[in-house]
Image (cartoon, rainbow, N blue to C red):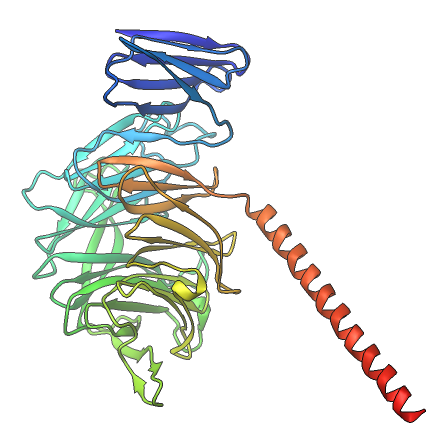
Length: 462
């Protein structure tokens, strides 16, 4: 049972059903622009209507009519299909088996993995699940990554294996490595640019046993001689930490190609240390150094936070670390020293930091706390430029959709939701205006002081 209403002013079609779902379609773009289940004590929905300009939607229930004000320009989409908490989300070009593989106007599709042990792709037009690739084994997925150039998705598992999913044929390979759960992984291209013939596609996986494993991706001829496939070879194993590793990130060689020609891998976790590893073809990676924290009494400590380090991000020579101690710290990668700390005093989080994400084009840092407060930082100024409380479930992972300028977040309640971000250009203009006004005010105040001093001295000389 469902009911329809037409919003002629905004050229939208509204549909509700007895289960409480409200869908809004644009017949101009032929896209679903809103989808959410409104369930509460008031009971099922029997009909929907809207006013002339579409600013108010009315939902008829058994004993009442509910009125909802419509906010346009703010987009929220909830994607449902997984049957477990989300582990990772990211964008890749459509696989050859996808219906949009030959569409020039479809650049990327959203892919996701969850604790229901499935990899899913999402139709960019209908926003519905378009393909499901199940993990047939009894093991549970524990980490997520992707390589855009090779068109593969990577999943770590609690049995220590690394799975490589080929989106072109729907197949995946299982690669044994760790003795315990893979807790984190990152991917790396070691070339100085995308055309560097000496560059290698690498994958780094970290485990609860404290090991860092290095894998190399190669292209091989398939057994049926029809096309090529991807092979993942274990090429290195390093005992990196004495406790569980919780996060890792790759620093490209462009940061310092002379000193680190294939880049660095940074690892951190429960032992509170942050270590840099020089990427090479050695079976055991060489330690390139520790991040060092100066203590108030002048000592140097290798313990970089007071609680577990849960997330890492990198932007050029800046390394960002988030911790259960509720702080974010910014480090100089080459110099291994602390630049600044973003904590509650700087407008930061009051509880543990859960996720970090760089917005590369905008030059901002996004952080998420366990209290579900999202903050956007202008980290060069150590200031929060925008924040919001996410009230639609517990976020477990996120990525940035550069096309729409929104965050795409996986949640604990098995859904994928979008979060609107502010107009960064407007924020930048407002900040520049504020800085100019402060400089003018300071200059004016300085001018008054100088004038006052000159007058005083003139009086004394007279």
